[in-house]
Image (tube, rainbow, N blue to C red; front, side, top):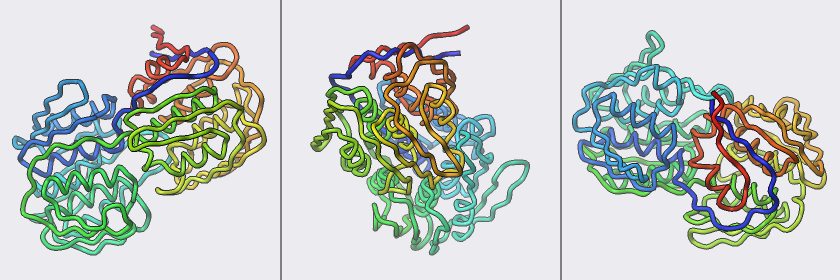
Length: 419
């Protein structure tokens, strides 16, 4: 099993290039199912979830060409199987994103109910309710969602809750539906906007991009296009937290500061000096961070995917802070691991109270989900002695070469294989 071995090495200095966003790349790959022409994607991060999606599309009959340098060409002209099987879906919840486009283009789809990570229930009822409103016949048999529709019909859909993948699935389905679809209470995340912009390039007619109301005028067919995946705001935020904790001065290249205003404001509040340009962010941190309160909410508020990293920063900050998690119900699984490193965090329900300590101490810790593993890496960068982070396959789902990127700015971090 692979692990990361980390030792504190003082301030971080230099440049880091940010990868494309995992949460944008996965729906974009699935959007290829909407056309018989080739979709050419650039700036695709080479991550475990991307490879799983590639396998899923190939299993359905798609031709996927990749040069392994962040470019994919996907052609779904030869799709001969509209089923997404359990063995792939169980490893990645985002597999549900093949449901909408497959149903819209091929008239039927079967997708295993998703598995994925352990941060709480993320039901797919909003996806199914929306597709039924568009005229799909849906049944759940033997653990599979089975959907059929000769051609989906436009509908007015008000989602009961803000759901990113739900918005993406219904948005993709609506592009080929007959008539107009209105999606209200739609997610506004930059990754949803990125998908919508790509769909427009493919010939879709979408109004209200970036707002909570999307209006989609269905078209007969979509064509191929070339699209670059938006930079990963969560990866960027994670590296900014690393510098805020360890000190130093780092420039992030190929970043998208406009997609992460709330995070940048919170880092400024913690004492970091932040400067931004069109596609870069610089952070200069010459002091111990100040404790800051955060509350997670859907975009454009503070992202749940940055909560664990900020908790690691608060653990070594001056003062005490409160973190409230409103999105997922068990997203504090990193708390006991941070406490084993000497943090003083008490969590009850969806609230954690953190008393900042001067120093953490290295030990062996276990990652439980993607962002929890990132927060343990950050803690290891400032802990005395040696930190071993186990189960880093979670980390590899969302971070491309994290040890190499941190190593380039002065961290002592290496991947070790424990046979």
